[in-house]
Amino acid sequence: MITKNIIHGIFSDEVPLLEACKKLRSSGIRINEVYTPFPLHGIDPIIGVPRTRLAICAFIYGLIGLGLATLMMWYMMIHDWPNDIGGKPNWSYYFNIPAFIPISFEATVFCAAHGMALTYLLRCMLVPGAKAKNPDPRTTDDKFMIYLELNEEQSKKADEILRANGAEEINYKGTLVIEAKY
Amino acid sequence: MNTEKLNFVFPSKTKMASMLLMAVGLISIICMFVFDTNAEDHHYQHNRAWANIFAGSFYFMGIALASVFFLALQYAAESGWSTTIKRIIEATTTFLPYGLSFLLLIFIFGQLHMNTIYPWMTEGVDDVASPNYDKVIAGKIGYFGVFWWIRTILYMVSWVLFSWKLRKNSSEADALGQEDSKGFHWKNIKLSAYFLVLFAYTSSTAAWDWLMSIDTHWFSTMMGWYVFSGMWVSSMITVTILVVWLKKLGYLDFVTESTVHDIGKWMFAISFLWAYLYFSQFMLIWYADIPEEVVYYKTRWESYKALMWTVFFVNFAFPMIMLMSRDSKRNFFFLIFVGAIIFVGHYLDMIMIVMPGTVGHNWTGLSWMEVGTFFFFLGLFIYVVLTNLAKKPLLVKNHPFLSESLHHSY
Image (tube, rainbow over all chains, first blue to last red; front, side):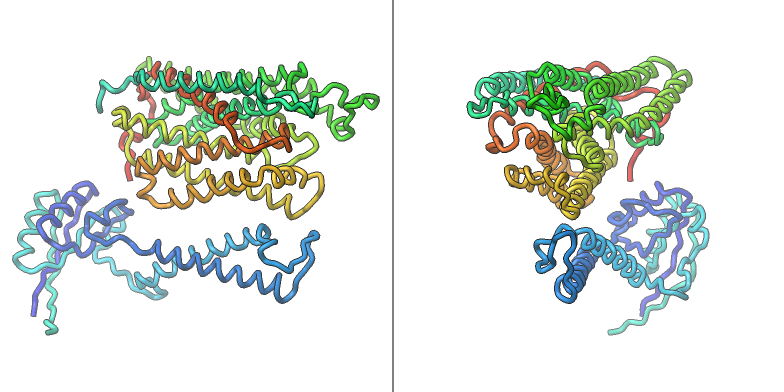
């Protein structure tokens, strides 16, 4: 059984917060989460979040969109109901490619964008009826917060680092008991 | 900030290189007029030589012109990020009068019937009795002739005046204090707004008058935007390459990585605008299949097929794949590498616009003539731009958004 302290380090500016994050990480403390009122670009590598794989997903969704659009247009325009449009008999997909490019492009963008948004929402469990998980509502207004779960020894170290780097408040929000599984 | 490196000194090696380019180019231009003849066709008056000079001067004039547009855009949008690179954009606009003078000379020679770039300049083209009579051109002749010359002079004078005044206000603001100089900034915002309205009309009409009228029978409503987007992307490439090159030389340490990333984004985004317009023009004409429109692509398809596909794929697929990710837009090597290739790609695009209407089926593929002319204008462009860049400090002094730009980072 492990007992961990829940620590909220509150800052009023992003610059000292980033500095504190760097110090915490270099002394081997894991940062669970950072809550900020606006996105901080470039914070991910500082707090140890691995590089996002959303771009790979976007590429795959795009390919799916391209494939679906091609299949749809081939079935409608070539296979099922060929038309003669502007003197261009639709017996071949290849020779009519310029006409199909806008739809292929739109479908690629449509699937990539919607797929990315849905993946993001599901991965963060932001489904309808989801409860807000923000531990301190002030971080939606003008405060920045580092959220830590640490054991006794690390808590002392983190406390010192947070204080030294200009944390406005350090709140202890009780303990977390983790049952050893093995 | 490194204050010693605030004034650019034109490196003697680069000066030598640009002069060498000009010399090589000048020799090949002279050779071009000697060798570019056609014994079978007596209408052929060094067509390819003239078309090459026309393409070169229009391309580099376009870079300067789009830089004036971009500068005006920064003022009118009151954008802060670009303040640290404003002097570089201003320097590229200084080529405008040089490019326009070359164009004017070509037009004057054309009117004197010493070149045949514009079919409507041919003598007796609207005279039924003349052997040169052309019914289609005779119907449009009211738009050409004197009216065309009035418009041409109007574009040239107004563009040069606006670019000169924008630069002048910017340097006069430097000489004054923080408070007094604000007036000049407001003046430039107003001036930019007027210029953008003027440019919205003249960029399209100039493209019709100077480029579309080479194929006088043909017309396309996409042409103005297509030419404009080509100019714009070339200008963004030029600014990017200049900024990265100056940073490598140790100047511009105040330009943040995010600013470089932002011009990289412009280069990437406008490449797409260009590809979109290129494809739209092609697809609409291909789809409608009307003979008087299709004739434009028929010549290109028959004699310029390789060039046509190269231009499209180099200028579209290349930046798309290479500049998509955030990291590559912050990598100096990638920016220079991709920039240099699509810079040449857009020059080839200009050749593809000009050649089929002037040289037509006499085209034998790219040769030393195109390369030589490109070298001449590139050398001249480098010389003019860098000479003017050395005249002023690299950083503006009293711009209201200066501090924002110096701290630009994300």
